[in-house]
Amino acid sequence: MKFGKSAKVVIFLLLFTNFVQAGYNGAESIDVKLKATIGDSAIVSVVYTPYAPGMRPDTCGCPLFPTGICCFNYIFYINESGAYFIDSSWDAPRIYGYNGYLYVFITAPNDTVEIFKMGTNCFEKILSVAPEIKDYIVDFAVSMPYAAFRVSSSKVVIYVLEPEVKKVKAVDLTKTDSFSFEGIETEKLGDRIILRGSDQTVIPSQLPAKVENGVLTFTFKKKTVKIPADELSKHLWVKEEINMLKVYPLENSILILPPDVFHYFSPCGNDTTDLLKIGNIEVKIVSLSRPLAVFFYKGRVKVFSLGTPTGTLFQVSAEKVRFKRCEEKSEIKHKTILLPITIAVILLAYMLFSRKR
View 1 (cartoon, rainbow, N blue to C red):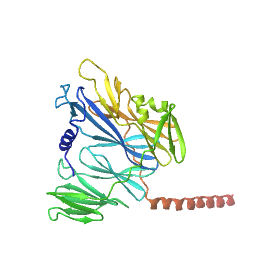
View 2 (cartoon, rainbow, N blue to C red):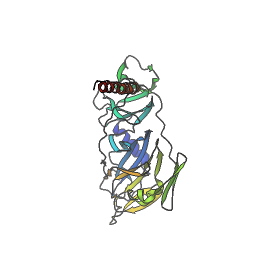
View 3 (tube, rainbow, N blue to C red):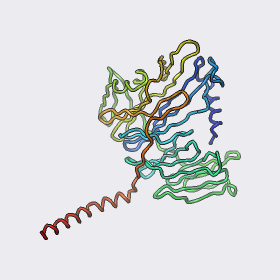
View 4 (tube, helix red, strand yellow):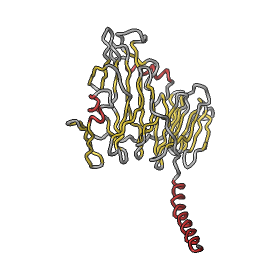
């Protein structure tokens, strides 16, 4: 079921009323989530939520509540060359695999659904679907290679995404309250019609890792990998994070993400010390003194900064994603056949020219 932005905030408030402790001037949660991988590339989402005491930001000592933004996602594309910002969203990205590619669906803040195609060495935007009514949140369902979008309360449009992107069908919901198309179906819930499709791609499991004698150790492809903890901890907010890093396998490399944290601002009274909570561990700090970083390992550690939490939002510092077109397999096959022919023609011309001389 789709909820509007205000409804999401209300639901979040109800769920977390007894969760966030009182006695602080405010707080922020920063959760770093792996959403999908292909080859040596990944999609990562930073889920950010700021909090204030009670319903009044100037009232200390009350339970903390989200301040207008709930679970806001900042979505990044990461590969060996760096971390790149794609877009932000009220929802987590939805990702589907098909024919050797991943298809990333992101509902942008303007309620437009953006669809990106991602391969082992490519990333491109292939489609944007906007609502036909102002402030309407587009609902969608996917059954690859098809995707259905409800662009208004009475209209659904269906696109095929491979081998080329094009609209294939439109459904008038004033004439029917149910339809089925290539694995996409409707479900009636009260007076609402819900779109249903296939499941998303599976996220790879974390690798078991441990820190002993100042070394982060884990096994990758039957080999033991050892990384000096100092190479990582100097880029973390506190050294205690090193024991809670999330290690994920890519095709020929490793992606290491920081743990989820809760940052409490200075408590009520004269104390100016902040508190960083990592799981069950609490560490007193002055502030979050450096950007949030992720680590890419392929023989050596690369550090990529994503941005900085400010107490009211997550300030992205990574550069905007750069698109590289994903070639179809037929194009690659054509180039593979054409290359040796081209080389042969050049050699033949060279031989004929040499004889004339």
